[in-house]
Length: 126
Image (tube, rainbow, N blue to C red):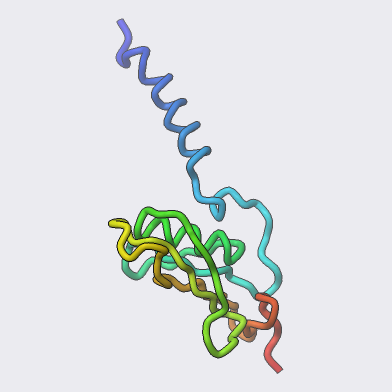
């Protein structure tokens, strides 16, 4: 007699395959970040949890999905021209107002001794 039902193995395989397909791109990206770069922050929905994406588009997409469950509509440089900050536009989960709002922000985080530089990379401080 078996201790486990036979169907648990297919369920585990299915769940693993589902995670691989749905995992955030930042989790699947195997490439190392450039020197001095932590990555682009995004909204996780969990207070005090800092996660990093490899690029600002992925960060804004994840913020939109985690915040409202809607797709990213647009991105823009934040007013003031700081290369380390980008605004993310997406719709509210209720669809009001139409066309979305500038809800989120993606921030380039750098290691100690580095600062955000154009075009979205971290450079050594002088």
